Amino acid sequence: MQRKTISVTGMSCNGCEQNVETALRTLDGVNRVEADNEADTVEVVLEDRVSDGDVNAAIEQAGYDVVA
Image (cartoon, rainbow, N blue to C red; front, side, top):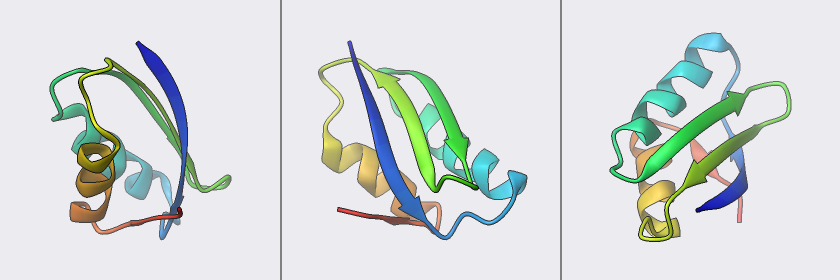
């Protein structure tokens, strides 16, 4: 298991947080997600088999940008 904090831009409300959280929860191996639009971050706890690319793609498909 690993815990990551990801910088995300484009979230401006609680609905945005829920969109990102829902997108990440669809990934097999994601155990916990908490988005914070005020801090522009997403905290995620996931299994080692989940790649950064999968996480970033899910966030971007939800309509938000991952900051490298």
